[in-house]
Image (tube, rainbow, N blue to C red):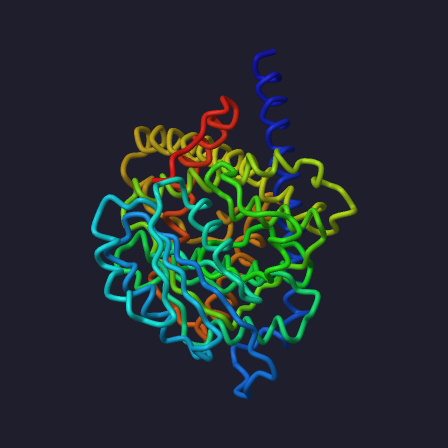
Amino acid sequence: MRVIFSKMVETFFSSILYVFLFFSLYLEVFFLITFFEEREKMSVVKPTNKLSHYPSATIIVPCWNEEKTVSGTIDSLLALNYPQNKLNILIVDDGSTDNTWHVIQKFINTPQVSLIKKENGGKHTAVNLGIEESTSELVGCLDADSFVEKDALLEIARAFNEDSAMMAATPMLVVHQPKNVLQKMQQTEYHAGAFLKRLLSPLDAIYVTPGPFSIFRRTVFEKIGLYKEAHNTEDMEFALRMQKHHMRIRNVHTAQVHTTTPDTVYKLYRQRLRWAYGIMKNTLDYRFMLFAREYGLLGMIALPLSFFGVFVFLYNFGFILFYTVQAGIAKSVEVSVAGLSALIPRFDTFYLNTDFMALLAYILFGIGLVIIWNGIKLAEGRFRPSMSIFYFLVLYGFIAPFWFMRAVFNVALSKGTKWR
């Protein structure tokens, strides 16, 4: 009876995994089909002709204790290939306790730059103050640890000129000068993410307007209001609010922005915990959009995937971990009986796992590599093999479960997260 019960439990959990693998394969194939349809539009070659209209733009740089990076951020904005009389830069010091305010004094006499100091109230309050102070056609934000390519604003302005219905633009984010293994792992993660965001763009399914250089038409704030605290992920809440009002958000992959990423496991954990928690809480706040045809592929695919994907990831991780441990125990028993010769790998096709679940996993892994390949090609213009890919494939699946599990725990107990 115990054996029968054990087999039933194993069959039940295996069936769930089959379902998850099937839907994961369906989504990956769906994204690949979208890629083939959009392939001609995804060239990294940028047009050289000038714009017929240069909309006035204000870029807000909210900063809190960013003394090490804020100067480089402002320098990158001043180097933008954009008419100086059309660009204003607002630096908002949100009550920094380090030397940030002292560092930005070097720009006090720069005509394009305005400096504002306020009491600490959170990033969203700093950005809102900048929005209220601005009068330009376009308004955007750039985190004080990010750096723009010189044509980034030009490419975004071009996209606004070409699509009068577009209300917001997001750039392509890449990792700024990755140095250690952790940052190089994130480099490949960002490349794959950039590719997927580019595919979500024509589907009207973008649900985050990230802090590094998302640009909006001024009318957006006039119609739906300013930023909210939103579980320390105001960039997702605002994008969902735009989607609620059917405002078009597009990804401009030719506008590249370099962002500084965490360089320690603890910093990465804190950042990703905040992201995962914010995604889940904001999705619950906008749960009426889940599986709602009114919101198209955002409601039917993208948003459910962002929420339920956390549970799917954790389930798959637990399933793989369980059977890995089980196989390890079996191998240890085999070694105790047959000796160390049992550890010698056998490279015979007879020992290759060819059951249906394994074949699904192989296909998923292969399509994942295709996504990484095209993400790197989209970001860098060509594919270049690097250790970053290896680090991502080996490390991400081991460390991501920690912040996903904590995020689920925090959501269940309504326990918030800190910014840092």
